[in-house]
Image (cartoon, rainbow, N blue to C red; front, side, top):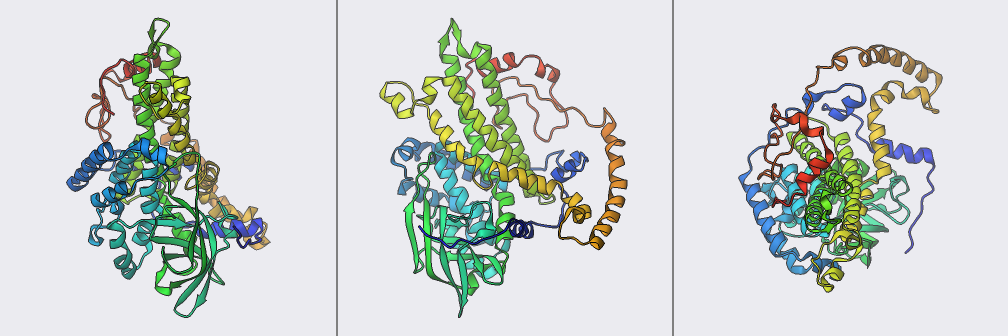
Length: 533
């Protein structure tokens, strides 16, 4: 596998990344305000209202039935492929058009219902969640929904809603988090462009019929194209194999003199990276959905095992060491789902900028889900480390615990690694400071620019710094405490009965007992009651 390498300096790489980010804040942001020392609780509480969607609820019911009866997760893990009948069944349900507007044949789901759908299918097999997420969150549907022309939407979205699969191709052998090194070139020719290059780790690349391809147009910059998957000159060189997500259809794809019509440029020349980053603002929410799925499954396995397994005269769940681990899994899963639901509803409400919030939720969920799976293996001991099919062969009940750990590991890399998330969040967090004082530390800025920046900084910090030591934030009674108290088994909402609704302003009586005993709280989860997950 050969590819063209570009020699790019550190400064050039930073300039490319900086030019791609959204430089303006047109809407308020809870995350941004938090980093400025302003606790704008009014931006997230009370929770945005969830609009009634009977059609979406009916789709989720059908999808749940399909996932329980038609998806054999063990078979996908064993064969390392998603069967054709699963693809066809998902297409009949409309699952490939979840985020496509109804006018183009899709379901037009909100971010909240979409993530709930991913949680459902992810509970059957994580590779199916990755298939649908890569197809819609970063594949052709979402970029066209935000940046596509009316002609592009009419030409491509109905095909995708009907069941065709799409993929997103940015990564190259020499290009990961640093897109300035992009080597795929789109050379202008009569009527369009000619693409040449190699793309690596293209999720859905082996089965996709429509591709979003990032390529460099000379003198214009990185540009996004819609490319037909069967276009002359495209070669899928291999299907990649990974530690987890064994059913993932992931490819190395080569472009050799592939013609793309001018009409297939998305959003304009040189706008490719900005399109990718904007798409990921909501696209990143799909990964926490998969983490929530794994967390709920982990809790179910842990509760069942710890109630049935007896050591030292008691169920292992009654021993504090195990009870603390189950408490951690339960609390973390609840936190992941709550933050994801809130971020989805903020995105659907469309009144706030969620770029920081989405990155925070992705970072939190991917890191914590990994710890949840690790703790589950510890609770199960040798049976956690043993493969599910080996357990069956020995006559024991299967539990895909080690598979979950392998499947979850990629979430700390997918759609922005943990380290890149740290950088992205930090960059957005200090944006207000860089906008007024950035020239002071910019080595390229002359004395005049630095002097002006000094003046702006004096005015900004003269007003801002005093707010950190005086005002509502120093009032102990300024923000009501919000504490939860678990009581009995889960209600239909997925929360234990007696827990407050997410838009409730009153908390259940006895909430102060929440912090009384972690072991007692964990014992509630491990008491053996039949609670649905």
